[in-house]
Amino acid sequence: MIRKELITDLTLEAGGALAGAHVVYHTSQEAWDGRKPVIWICHALTANSDPEDWWPEMVGPGKAIDTEKSFVACVNMLGSAYGSEGPARENPETGKPWLLDFPKVTVRDMVTASIVVRKTLGVSSVDLLVGSSIGGFQAIEWAVTEPEVFKRCLFIATAPRVSPYLSATVEAQRMALEADPTFREARDLKGGAAGLKCARAQALISYRCFEGYGLTQFEADPDTLFAGRAASYERYQGEKLVRRGFDAYSYYTLCNALDSHNVGRGRGGVDAALARIKARTTVVSIDTDALFPPQESSVWARWIPGADYIEISSRFGHDGFLLETARLTAILMK
Image: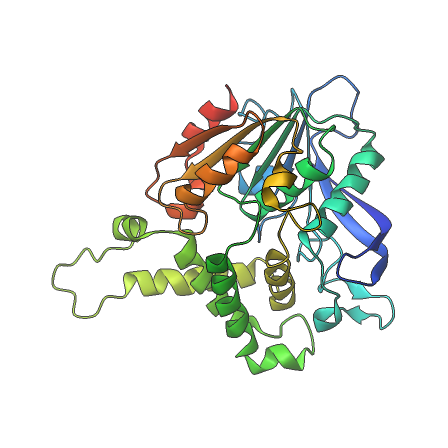
């Protein structure tokens, strides 16, 4: 996919503004020809705006989301480490990275930036909007904000409002960042790296489930004195995120943004907000997802007019949205 960037002024929901904010996005063709169907993907927490990079089994030539037959677009969310305006970019007032000085952004701010991109591309109608996890937060918010724009929506492993459980897991991750003394020193983008590794390891536990760890991280030696394989995996995942160039300040910003998610704010509640959605909608939950359990998803899915609700089975918890590609492909093709 083709990387692009625009600069725009954004008024922020929590107060203040970003003048000359950079917004990075990817498209499958240089420009929309006005004929190809448009598929818009909203990415998850530490992903980027190139879905062929993090969802290769689903996105690409000949895949369920075919980048040759459709005009595919994805915007890097505000606050991310991967290009859009956030703590890793330069604060124009200081000439240094924003770090902890970056203002608080909300999920609605992220959607506002995506709307700017949509209009810049000349896209007036989106055939399919797809979002999972925090990408689903954005997709639901966007479908409520611009109901006339979308023909079909696919919301996977997500919710219309952040839950107390998710907020608690996010706070534990913020605490890990704050426990690293180099985080508060905020000297450069390397600050808080040890805390970020810990936060990522904590997050991964909530992304997976008991059965998944049992399948992939069990001790092969029946006489093992001290179990270490799962512990090694946790450390590896924390180190991997840091090696990918993600920084603690961007992670902190996105954790705060998660807590802002509530499509019902100022709209008469979640049920009233979801009733605004006009697209043909499918809500997908995963039976082992601790962050967005089926008992929650099956309730709010009924508040979207005419929505279909599908529960899929996975041994990998919330991360099933990345791994259960055969089942998701079948749903997408309906």
